[in-house]
Length: 207
Image (cartoon, rainbow, N blue to C red; front, side, top):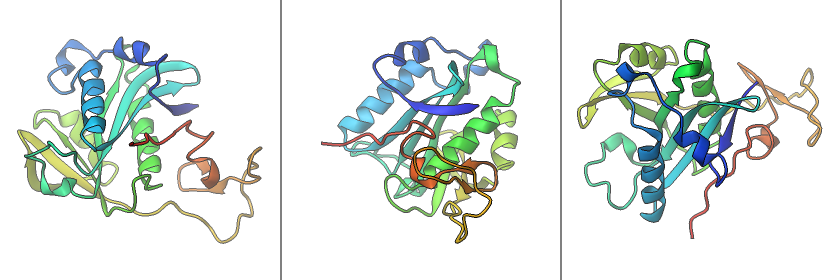
């Protein structure tokens, strides 16, 4: 079962060892660059959520989610204001072509739709114009081009909708901690576990 786990002092070293194929390196930053960007975002009063992507206990990739912009992002696109960003996504070259990228996006969007930094209308992302694989994958989730660019990258946007929380919980699966999983479109999700056990997600605090 695929899951997201926050970056910590132990798994960060394994995440730094992940890499994509040689011909993909022009499309995605290395994970050491991503971790540095996460650190500087936090120190400049921004919000960022970096996660390892795990299949059970096997680390297969990395995803990073942002919100709004930090104090020093002078050329940020307008869509960044008060919206979430699927900032970085990579699957290690050993684990590609197994459906992990698609499932990781599903998990990332489920997390975003809990609105950990507050409500937002959109999730946005950007990609290199030559990265047709990424374009097709993102558009299969409903992302659409806006005509805006982030530097030399094409921006696509997805309108966010809240997690489904049915008025009746009949038919849900049992959650050991909270009693019931609410049934969503793609997976059974215990709404109360979203910030706890289900995805092992904890928001980064800002002092």
